[in-house]
Image 1 (spheres, one colour):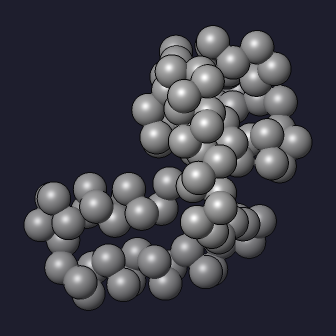
Image 2 (cartoon, one colour):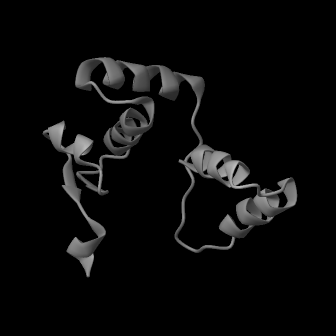
Length: 95
């Protein structure tokens, strides 16, 4: 999630300028789609937190996967294994 990346950048001492450069650079990637999230999406995410016992970050990924009709997620996080309709693969599965 993009907001989390920025938070980590701040924690590592990156300046507002570094963050702006990073965010601006994302506009140059062909094939990269950034999905805007509305408050409704975040409310629906809390339902997944409740139903699946996930933290907000993982529940948001599950919510978006469902919204986008994705069946596979690439992650090392085994928490996604409890979601029966979502298959987790690791990056090594694609090498």
